[in-house]
Length: 191
Length: 399
Image (cartoon, rainbow over all chains, first blue to last red):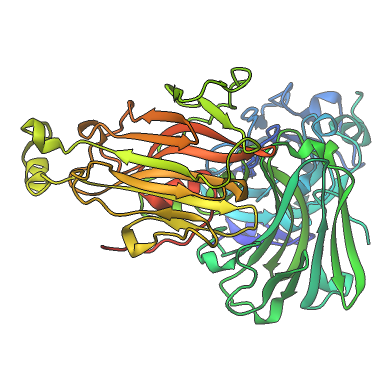
């Protein structure tokens, strides 16, 4: 049974799933039921060193850079509407291949053209992030953001980080002013 | 506290208890905006339509939710536990879209003190005709969300959103969006004793009420042919089962009826089923003369509209009450006489298998009324109602 986290909560992935090697980080939200522009949410992942910054711009995994240089992180592609059951966007992480100098991987979601479309996370229903064990497709942890999402247009949903030899997952649910560009810049990406 | 679209808060965090008023101020020049509240279950459905509070149903059975003087009174503590979400909605009755809204607001007021205000205006919208303004919902605790999203399809789209697929009824056909009435073929014919045929769906004709002599009601007549007269009726195709079911269908009983909503807000259904024949001299000032069970009566079934100026929307329908549901076999036709002009509507695009045909829509148009040929086929009254958005409650009936 997956661990259901609330904002700020964390769980040891390694303890929940002993022998864990690879995870899938799934992100989902409901397609817009009302009339108006679709909700196009974009998931991104930042591979960060101990200093909280990317080692290079290639550590910014997003719709225009779907794979990390070392191949440990793979973004499975862009979903433009949120239509369909289950994960709308997914990022696969081979934890055994993540370089030792990567301490954290921050997963964020931004709303594409949020300002022009006058949208924010509070208008999106049933947004979630979940971590799945790739070996058996079992969900290890889930965080439902619905009630923590409000007028933000960019949000850090969660992060996967090292804790000694283990990997942990934290439900962050933190809004960020500005869109993907400023968010990336805050992690040291040259945008 | 002022909130913006998308914002959410826990009621206790805003020191709001369980008893409060919701006041929505929304208006636009020349538009009629109705306010309503949907009490929704955990699955997002209006599973109990007594919790749809609007001008024609002003209080829920538990009295926890009511509408008075334009304000909703809410008592969360006495709501049944099945109601998890109260969605406050505005809808446009008639022409116009939400983009025309002036500065508007949703206010939550407790004991006379404004606790939360959500301002919105036409610039937040485009062609929506129904908007979910805000919702009060239970998730661990009672919360408030400023929604500000809606539907161009208006109230009927909204009703669908709140549980279209919950009934076991066959879903109505994807009703072709009723095209806007074509520009009236300039100046209604001045010729008296004229006959106008509304040939295609969406064709319409305006009836000037200024000229109408008040003593002569508008006369709506339905006629059809008894299919047996021409030999083998309906059921040819369809094999064993349809043959079995159609054995007793020799007599087709076609009923004339209407669903109406008056400008006063009164609404109802007039039809032989249930014995709702209306009234000549009191609301709704619409009367049905008789129930012709076979099509044999020379003058068919007749409905008289005495006070057309009171009509907001009237949907004239023909219903196959008994016999095989085959409109193609009965050659139905409706004529609408106003004074000396007769408007004829033939059911020339029959959809066999559906029992109810919404033949024409009569709606107010400025100070006058307009007749629009719809000829839309529905499985039953409920589906028809959902299309037009009256919001009646339906139970099975038998003559």
